[in-house]
Length: 203
Length: 256
View 1 (cartoon, each protein chain N blue to C red):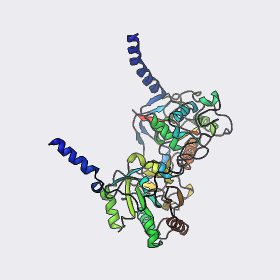
View 2 (view 1 turned 90 degrees about the horizontal axis):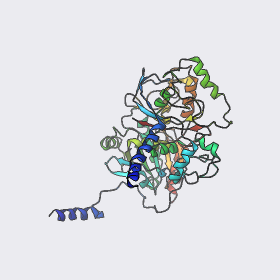
View 3 (view 1 turned 120 degrees about the horizontal axis):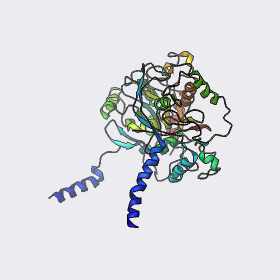
View 4 (view 1 turned 30 degrees about the vertical axis):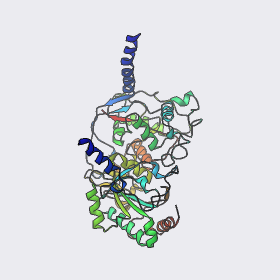
């Protein structure tokens, strides 16, 4: 009886139709067999958990351009502006371009930014989770992720963070195409132009 | 023969552990007055007991790491982890220039490479506070920072041109904890170098640059006479994680 149960479980798990949904970005089906460029940020393994509690490595984003940044949910001042930046960039894209670019917001506060906390931000800010992903890394990976993105931060005594803010545009292979520290609802025009070019180019 | 082999099996691992332990000095930690001034952090910081390498990692040691972890060879390393000058001073990807270089502290290593080395040793880079605490000591005192003669001695190193050949690691007298070369040899990475957020112009403390940093303002110095620490902080705060320089090395730390 027990053996039969095990078998049933094994079959269920093996069935692709029943496996858990993966958090792959739109267009992620690109040939992943080709080696990563050496200057790709995806050279760094970064296991993440998104607002739905789904686990994925940011390498799963390979295949479509991404706008990546770091934030934390309890941040009062700059971080809401980071979301504004992402929205403003989206607004300046055509629907077709928009569908090809993913937005990935990585928390620098994995202790407190649970999937529920991330989801609360997505809901409150009315973010379309088909394109937006809010995710937390493992605590030990935060400084390395910040390192490849060129972001600096320090945790303060009260649990807030001191940090630099930047939006980083990655191509389909994780190479940094553009970067801006202009945060807010008026996006950096050069950065937006770079996002449009990335969205238009075929991987 | 058998008993000998058995004895060796018992003794060798112990010898290995002892050798590894000897590379590290034990530091007691405690309440420490950092020269850095943060708005959120008043008074002394608490440092847990930890262990710190007695000497900076040498080229020979780093070469052994590169041979065991070929993804860190200069011709194979991912560009996001180390810029072009990474280990450029070696003769070839797995060959040093000579025996002199072997005993010099390794430089031209990025934060990622230094972190990976320490991780391979079951250790990590020290935090800035751990480093500053260890480096506050001289040969006889745990905190020599108020002594003008000691400050002068440290500063004299900074005035030496960095084009001169590096001395080998371990020539200077150990400090009271048994740690050598924290001053007077190379600059050193810290694990949290990118938490040192110095405003681009410290004269505008707190206002002009506030929007650059989310939260409280950037750090400033509590101890303006301590130029040696100030220079270290300024240097580390200017670096990116893939940067390397000809006089920046590292050593590892671990929890007790």
